[in-house]
Structure formats: C-alpha cells, structure tokens
Length: 242
Image (tube, rainbow, N blue to C red):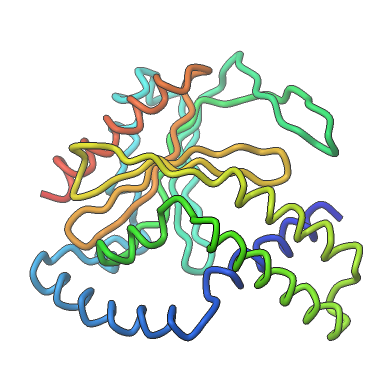
C-alpha cells in the first residue's frame, strides 16, 4: 500500500512539472540552446552512460569519506534513464524516519552517491531547482487534483489511494527548499525534499552543460555532510570534467 502511494505521489509531482503548453514551448526553445551549449563545451552525458562510476570512483569516495576502500560496498544501478553509483560503509549510526505519524530509528550507512548525470541548460537547471512561488504551489495542487480525478475516472486507483498520494505529494512540495552554493561549477544548489517521512538533501551541480546529483551521508552533522558533498563535486569537476 505504501509503495502504491509513493508511486502515485511521484506521478502527481510529475504531472505538475509537465503542466501547461507554456512549459512545452519553453522546453522546445531550450533544446536549441542545449545543442549549442554541448557543441561549445563537449561535455556530453552520453559519454558517461553505463560508466558513471568513472566519474566517481571508489578511490575518490574513499578519499572524501576517509574510510577504507576495501570495506566499501558498491552499488551501480541502472534503471531506465536513471543511473546511479553508490558507495556504502557500515556505521553505528541510526537515522529517524516518520511512518504513519510515528518516528522510529533505523540503521544508517555511511554513503556517497552520484546520480542523474544528464545534459541540460543553465536556464532549465534553474527552472527545475528553485523555490516555488505561491502561485506555483497553487497550480501544483490543481494539477495533482486533476490527475487524481483522472485516475479515479479510469479506475486506475481508488479515491483512498489518490487522496493519500495527493497529501504525500503536497507534503513533499511543502518540504522542497533550494539553497544556492557559491563558487561551485557554473551554478549549484542544495535541494531539500522528502516524502512519506523520509527527508533528503541533495547537491545539484551544473557545469558546462552537464548536471549531476550528489547525496552524501557520512555524519549526523548536516554541515559536515554538505562540506563533503561540495568536496566530492569539486573533485569530479577538477579530475574528470576538465
């Protein structure tokens, strides 16, 4: 049931992100800009397809984390357009998550993960990762409600499922917050998000037409994790993209 709700919530968030002809016109215009950017810089996501572990190697992750490379577990995942590489170490830490309104502690591993390596433009990157306005949030609610009604009418989900999913998606949007990071790549931000009681803080980096996402969890201190994420991003840019 929870998996179904999360899946539906993701659909509602996607429906909002794609809402309106204006968005389509904007994307068409940005396509030309992206091609011109790629021709100028030569950084192509396609060059790293199937091998993003060459962008973030075990040795790099071990150096940033200060943990032994020999004790790391590597997970190189490829699912549709999403490819990620994660390096994990066992730890004595736990983290708090919320399930059905109750907080519980679960084991936490030390992790460094790279994902969402893709080509985009600076304009599109800033559009995707900005703090939503009150009007955008209002439009989001309308788009999600429309999608819920559509799923109900087509008998693809019952009202209980869509109501729960819409509430989860609204909760995710309420937690969405973007913080700019100075002097990193061409433009970078930390993005706070969360769904179904799980909070996420990602570093999103744009550099010469290429964007990538880093998630670093090596400490209970958020500031320390931020510093390690920035260090990892600079390492990728300096060692692999220059």
